[in-house]
Image 1 (cartoon, one colour):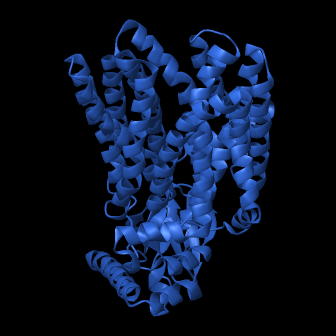
Image 2 (tube, rainbow, N blue to C red):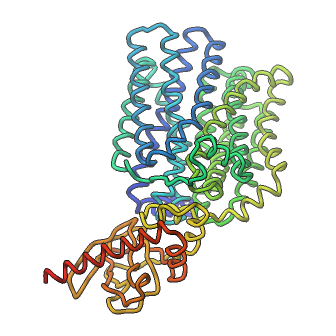
Image 3 (cartoon, rainbow, N blue to C red):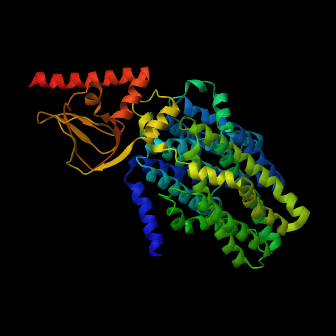
Length: 547
């Protein structure tokens, strides 16, 4: 228990120092609760209109536009700053959910309601891919990036458990319209939380990828990204099947009431909550394949056990174990995808993943009744148990190879791209430069460089606040996504000022050779570096003239 608490404290402490990531995760709570609540309310409404058949058809039909539009919507991340895209996603969810609520309150025809339900169904697909692509731009260290993925997994697991239960309470005292109205309010709150991040996380595209179809093709042609997307998609085939199978398990297998379908589903979500200590241990791990393999083995054993048990308590326990293994698998898989996908195409990669997963949920929902009809619950749960392990075994060596070479410094790349100085560098060069960065943590009140010294490094600020001091006077303040030290390197002169930390600062240092190679090897960077150096020299000259 102490180890679990310590791991959780480490994750929360790692994430707690980053205000921007805290905003994103707080909004993500609204997204997840809203998505699951609206899904339950939609199914309840459809069931009231035409029973289980209409409910199943509506669920499948709603997943189709989500699957089609998710990769398309992700292209926004190549044209608009990711922070702005994330805000737009939450705002769209709020508006479309509100329109559904109005339609339900006014007793609109069901075809009108179904048409309006496509809106939130598509809007909800925008958040995860945008957030996954945006997180490297907000994280200051690789540990923060993994920590935010872990916390996202916790939020999703808690939402699977809590949102349906809360929706049930709302439906007991209100109606589907009230649920959608509350979802709209929650998503509006999410939009307000991420509103200050608008304009952040701008994406500089490679000239080779001017066409959005070409950039999507680039993701598909990447064998490592493609394999991980397919593996995470296979997970959703199993989950889509499970959504249907828990109903059959409750009513047919265990001969319990319909309410037990909700309890069994909640147990799966609760397993993810109980696994928080294990997912927390993923932070800082260089290799994630062992976690993937172990989680898949536990997943398989748990679902095989579900098919064999005859008691409700055993089924609850095994589904909780399966839910915990799913949480570990999902965090490890998404983190690996962030590591291997081309940094300039992250939004496209996660948009494609969202579309694949929506389609996979539909496939699983259709397959489950067929499997039950052919071989009963044992065959159906055997399929769920075997699908992911078999896929992973087929991938085998390729998956291990991905893990061994998945060392793309996505956080450092995002930080360099946020500097106008390096923003125009093509992705391969930017990645090479990011690999050359050396992390430096400097306590408050320390001199990073001193006036008159020989210059040997350029520094990029990941966090903290530093003051530029010339002849004992503060000339400027430097913060995150700014750099310093370029003047001495470019003009081969002593440092023109002292740079001192006002607070503890996380910096990345780039040595002279790597900096000069980047500056002299690209005309656009050379011009930007000279303009920056000249502007800062002029700033110091004006201060000297005023003294």
